[in-house]
Image (cartoon, rainbow, N blue to C red; front, side, top):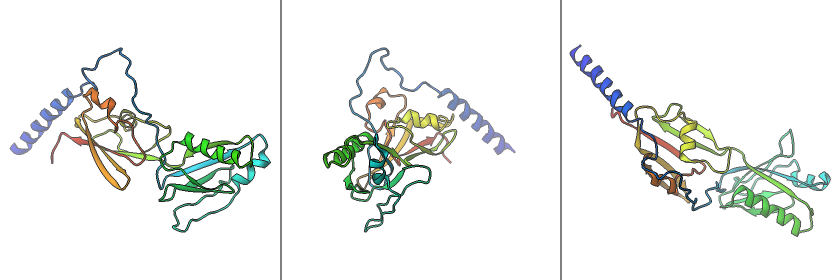
Length: 230
């Protein structure tokens, strides 16, 4: 019982200390001074991403063949498309070389492009080949996700629903850090070009805003370390 009492007292003291650590993020930053965002942090397409592609025109009959209900499989089995039953929605998987296959148009290199850049590239290809003079292409990510684990209120996997999402957006979606989360030691794990990188953030340091890791990419994992070491 004596040891149990010491353990409970220690836990209460630790909880008290952790509560005191609920400090504001990004401390000692100059306020009311606009700061330019140095880079365009839109999410860019990578191999094995899944995309939806819709091609429209003022003349629906001209656009229909580009959205034909078909199935396609590349030699490596990594590139495919199909149409949904509720509209002209093609779901494509980018192959390992960063390419997709479209009906009629054929192979399109999309590695490193944003959604809008890929849409413009497809529109230009259609227009330059005299297929349709007024194509409108809409690209969406089909299932782009990131994960937040560790000392947060709601750990789990979350869908990215916009072109730019920050570390703070991710933490907010996970319900913010618990009182036991280390605000000075938040890890971001990223796999890119066959390499894995682990970057650590201090959420109270204003330099976080200029970090190349501040905006998330697809499949990033945010891990909040705990103040409690078991």
